[in-house]
Amino acid sequence: MRSERLKGHLDLLLMSVLSRGPGHGYEVITRLRERSDGAFELPEGTVYPALHRLEEAGLLASAWDVVAGRRRRIYRLTPAGAAALAEQADQWREFSGSVARVLGTPAAGMTWRPLPRGAPA
Amino acid sequence: MTRHAADAPGDAVEDYLDRLLLTLSGSPRQVRYTLAEVEAHLRDAVAEGMAAGLTEPQAQARAVRRMGPVTGVTGHRTGLARPSLALGRRLMLTAALIGGAGFVAIGGAGLIARALLAVKGDAFLTAPWPQASYTRADCARWLAGDPGARSCVTAMLADHAGDFLLQATAAGLLGLLALAGYLVLAQQWRDRATRTALPAGTAEALGTALAAVAAVACVGTALDTEMTQRGIGAGEPWSLGVAAAVAAAVFALALRRTLRRTRPG
Image (cartoon, rainbow over all chains, first blue to last red; front, side, top):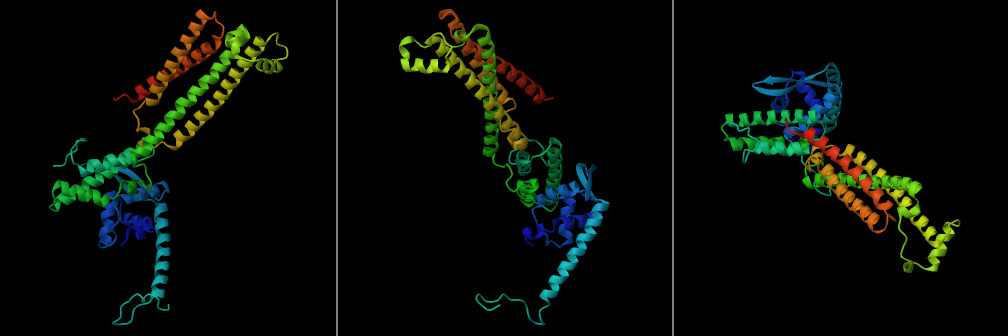
């Protein structure tokens, strides 16, 4: 999936990943890739401004720890973050459900094809 | 084996961290934290790549490629990755500081000149022009500006002293404006790239040198005037020389403080 499309939903995805347990930046991006079956590929560095922004907003908290011999910043979801995640997840489900209803499902044996250029909508 | 030497040749991770350091802005602690996080991330990614069978350079290249541009880590679309921009900003700050301090010193010279004027009179502050170098019209203009003057020369000296004091006051105000601009820009451009674009203490050292040269030149001129012109017109170089010497001392103290603060260990 194009990273530009993902960026608008990055905060929600990061909070969702961290709702399963605390983790450092590399763990977060690895879990995100695994849970999306590799669909969510974005420059890994872009998670850090998002993590820092969420921490500034009080939705995440971080603490330094030594894991596997390396000093790491471990992020966890705060109660405010859990509430924000629940609210944003509801909004996303409502939005994606609406989009799915508009798109409908293609009839059996048919696939979506783009209209030819100049064809009436 | 993973190299950690800062000067390891061809180490893509170290190169990436160097570029990131130049681009990061914020407090020293924020910069250190982000660098530590990203380094741990890259080392993890390299270890994963090597565990998957890549060579170390291949694993480093993959880790850096996946991390993306350093501006992605900083969150700035137009981060200060270009050293020339940082250098331009640093030079502008240096010029504002030295120029501002220089003009304020000229303003200070005006205050000293006022005191000299009150004590020793117009003739000490400025020397009269040679008799053949001015016209009757000049005399009429000077006398019109100072109707109580006893002669054309007296009116000329008062006019020239007034001009010097007015110009010094204007320079002082301009200097204060330049220093205010310096403070505003220094607050806005606190990123590491701008702060480190020139060696620490460059502005202070340059300011000390320029002010010291000005002080020596002005005091030398004043002494020469004292000896050859019996002090007539020595007040102007004296006031400028004293103000420049004070500016040199202030810059030197600032330089010493900066060097102590940035001394390793």
